[in-house]
Length: 214
Image (cartoon, rainbow, N blue to C red; front, side, top):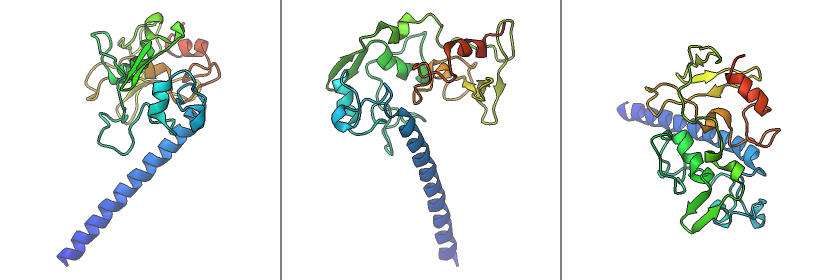
């Protein structure tokens, strides 16, 4: 009887693990489909992509649009996003949250890989050339000039928009800090969007209006 119960428990655990794997695969497949063909798809033409400007990233990507940013099914993932490498970025006192640090690894202009460095030629794509403050605390309770946020069941703070898309705020791995704006608040790195800026809403104008109330 004991062995039967133990076997049942194992089967339950295996079933749970299988469900988790299937969910991960489904999410990965959806992200793959959206990332494919965008500027964040670093595959070379020989591997089904269009990347002719970043040869070192193309080597890392191989035939996968995901591999430059993520490790998959590996203990190498250092956080919940399974990020692969920081590409030479050194966090500063101003930028510390992983949701911003990883983006800065490329968008500081020089992408340092194990096989060499790729350079971003367009200054407009560099973080330092954007005026919006990064990792500033957002007044989720409401404040003059700002729209109020709300807390999801998961505990994460978000800013609702009329586009049925919530702009996520981040507060570190333990969620004990005040919610702050990061790169991923405004940008979804998997979806290029109508304006080609990976915005979570259709336009820059709508993005500003989503946070800043008149």
